[in-house]
Length: 312
Image (cartoon, rainbow, N blue to C red; front, side, top):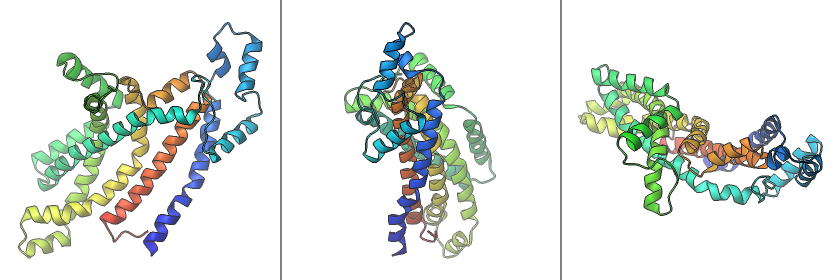
């Protein structure tokens, strides 16, 4: 019963977070230098034309009134109208969600496929050269920014050995998967190093635990001890770490989508910032914030599922 109550009440605890994000986003967007109306109309626009555009989009209202309208739209499930695209923000964002979701899911999947085997290899050879090599690789991997990794992958797999596309998203399912390889690998190479270090440390700790010792005393092979007792117990902290890094992951998608010209929400956000499209910036930021909150909620549930001893 307590677990069901947690699942029902936990989302309510995130409401103040969403409200705070809406205020911060609204204020920071208004701090971007430049007038959206002047950026839209160009340097030769007349004061009358600029005033008309500002009145059309409510930019001539007091700042507190603009936030009130923004909050009112959010409560009605709307996000205003884009100054640049001349359409509602929510449908505009909906057209960009698929590439971003595909990039995030594929990047997380690749990160897990890279981190788990290498962390297991390092933990089972604790203190040996293989362990030291994995630790060195993970340490260096943390220091490489995503845009640099993206450029190196482009030079290697698209210039030196032209086997993968470097831009666009494609139209068919197979084409989309091929176009996602380089962007998702860029994020995965950075994220997997963080997961690898956490998972390796947890595995090493559980290999020395009383649970593993008792299993060995019962005559279990070392491989069974590792996969049945060590890995399941070591996963819980890594799930929490992945949830904590979801903000970094979303930030990585913004950079990577711009580098690879992937038509997702990250690229839309960058273009909206340059064009001073307040409504789009606020809308994308709110979607990212809600996604982060949702991922953290799912991570809490997954942690409890992986380790029932965790207290809610």
